[in-house]
Amino acid sequence: MKTKTHPLLIAFAALVFAFLIGPLIIIIGASLSDSSFLTFPPRGLTLHWYENVFAISAFPRTMWTSFQLAVGGTALSMCIGIPAAYAMARYRIQLPRFLGNIYVLPILIPEIVLGFSLMKSMAIGMDMPIMASLMIGHALIVLPYCVRVVGASLNSFDFSIEEAAISLGCPRWKAFFTVVLPNVRAGIIAGFILAFITSINDVSVSIFLTGPGVSTLPIQILAHMEQFFDPTIASVSVLLMFVTVAVMAVVERTLGLTFLTK
Amino acid sequence: MTVSLSLEQITAHYGATKVLEDLSLHVGEGELVSLLGSSGCGKTTTLRLVAGFLEPTSGAIKLGERDLTRLPAHARDIGLVFQTYALFPHLTVRDNVAFGLKQRKVATAERNRRADDMIERVGLGHLADRYPANLSGGQRQRVALARALVIEPPLLMFDEPLSNLDAKLRVDMRVEIRRLQQANGTTALYVTHDQEEAFSISDRVAIMNAGQIMQLDTPEVLYSRPANAFVADFVGFENMIPMRAIGEAGDAVRAEMAGGATLDFPKSQFTVPSQDFVLATRPEGLAVSTTDWGIPATLGLRTYLGRAYQYQCTTPAGEVKANGPLSAPYDEGLHVNLIPLPEQCCLLPAASA
Image (cartoon, rainbow over all chains, first blue to last red; front, side, top):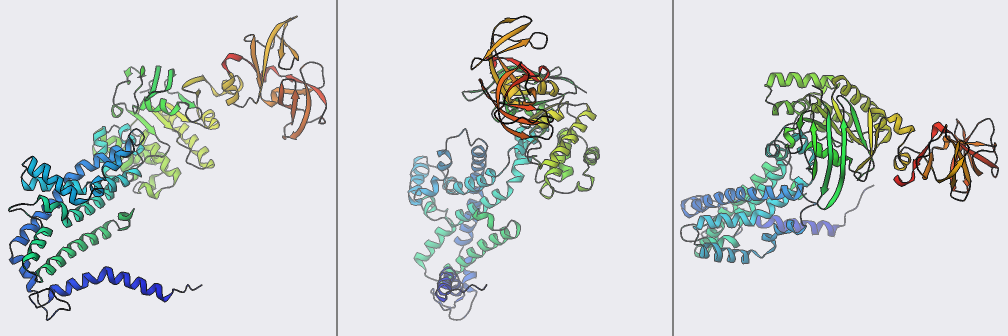
């Protein structure tokens, strides 16, 4: 039997894809344009704006900061998130239900509110160094991803496997590292990647916590755009895009993307 | 090294709920004892207490001379086989089996040699490099068994190890478990809800209910001489007729059943345990007869069992099932007497019902 697809449906689907992919194509085009302002279609082709990204020292500097924050913040978040997810999966019956929801609060609260309150409490209230408060802020906004994704893995983990290890003479803490962690590895990697991408792209929390001398890449992009409306922005955006795609490609190769949607 | 396991007056709680009450159990050296009962009877709790995954509120657990009661689970040296097999998915069969040896710091070469020997013994030599995901249920359980045995534990414990397998495999596996357990002379505690499994594999069986052991004895005794109404019902004594001793009649005890009928129990064949008691029996323990001694009954539906006819009977005390000889099929509606056969009937104290 041949199913007939309605032409309107095809048109609609095409439109959705155009809407999703179109801006990305435009931005690639704009980044290659040989004009001093953002334009599409590109006039002439040049890689000048890519050079420019690295010529303006603020870009590599903030890139490095963003990278540090993404790795450090996510790592910090995992240190809280993995034990939390473990406890909630292992002692599901004994623990109150709302506990799981608390860890999702950072996505539920408007980020702008979160950013402001973090600035008020940490940067101003406690007079914390900028980098430290940024690190904590990023750890907080990525925590829901860590807890949820690792938690999903742990929920399908048969804890009698852990008990088997213990009964064979493996102390509890060691059983966690030798038996539990290796079997939820996929969840941890997935959580790490989601958290990493969230952190790299964050604006609303970072904008409150950045300060003199310390900024992140998205904030730098905004700052640059306020002064110069040139294709450098497009170039840096394309670079950011390719990093994300590269990360996703690695995930797809090693683990398959489907588990992200689980 | 063969040692015995002792549970002494164990009481255990889940939060505020008492799940075990004053439970004592002794498993002799090299003996296999099953804990048998329906879910929630406390059998798995008992096993988890011995394994060290739960702590008793009071009481002591001893393995030989060692007091296990407050010892952490990993230091107890007990081989455990789980219902879900609980193999390590990220390790090969060989590494699964060698895991316990690795914890015991056995050198790699020695470790692999002993693991391979054990894998060979459970008949999986050709699968040592496979991962658990690529094994069938029966193969997985063999790996789990090998993994528990290779550490040569003084005590083996099984938590419903066969309930995820199909019927044919279940019978094969229980023979295998029994064979390996006896070959090593390992003391074993076996938890199951399957009566046939428990009876076929065990030296002794503890029938549990509501956190207590109702009776602990050999399968033969449990099957033919249950000590109380719960166990009688559990092992298939379908007829339970409440009775009350009302006096003596020569060398017999006269008892009255509900509905007013009386029956004389000759003292030479029956021992009446208390004034109120229960006559418990399987259908084959009540013989349909036209003689004048027995429980008066009216025959109902007759069914053919191959070895006998079975009748649904109406007695003054209620409905019972009784068997009659193949030589003489009786018709529905006939008034007969049901003769309790002494070797197949138990008189049980009513209070324990």
